[in-house]
Length: 412
Image 1 (cartoon, helix red, strand yellow):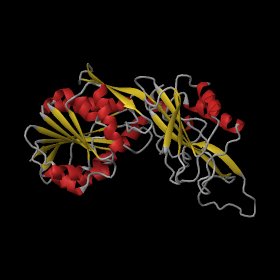
Image 2 (spheres, rainbow, N blue to C red):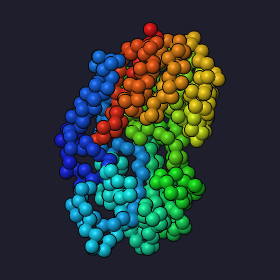
Image 3 (cartoon, rainbow, N blue to C red):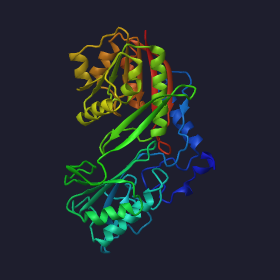
């Protein structure tokens, strides 16, 4: 069945309630065209040429990580509509749900019974966990009262390795052996962990993590190919539950391969990998330069990068735990034979960092953006000294309005 035919709303009964797939009612090709048109509009002041989009080969079951929430919530008996007021003369009834957040709500979740995003194990696993929780009489978390023991369920799988990890987030002790049995009944090979989170913040951020079965990490591979499709390099990543990694492995490796091809053309001696995370670009291109300086402000990501460099036998990547705006002030960029790679968060670059990069004098810049709006803001600063020479995009997130953009800049 073609992607065009598969992208229909009847694929998922939760469409328009769950916040995960806003564009599922559009054929995939139309989704891509819609994003492409929006991207052209946002970047029109900087680029008037074509913006080709690399699509996800299979727009279903592509995600390598999901986080689901347990939620104890009042039963909503009316047709779902925010404008409909509940009849307050009737007593509240409560239900327990396990799934993704209801669209536009922080305190309610959709009890997921089907999903086209993650993996074939997702729905059987949710059914097994629900049955376990009911058998053990465990209460789901109430986001308004901050009561209950079960908070989140995180799943992560290596698309190129098949390794998997399941992490249960709780506020208190739970029967561990029966939980392990429930998971193994549908996913025998998965690693299993227990995380404690008693904070009021609704995030899957653990105060402690403990292995119940297997290991506390999985391995994933990025397979880098030439423009002709010939494998050139393979990078192994050790991923803990909290490690940052692109959630669409197979499309991400197309982007890394594209960046690698550009680095080959540019032939820099030094790469400044700014907002470098765990060093994905540095590790992908380490054999193409004398050294790469990876700058990242999130300490666990830096630690993961150092660990993954050792894992891959890479010795010419230096990791710096610092804000980019501080790094460029303390260690000015040496423009000779250098390339700057930028991959900032959704909020974009700090203005001081953008100004320092714009005034660096480096001949070429590659800017990877997960938010075209903040990309346009940063380009207002960068294009004072640089001009865009190419723009392209990668559709990492089918059925959403998000898209990854890669622009090339050359010194004026």
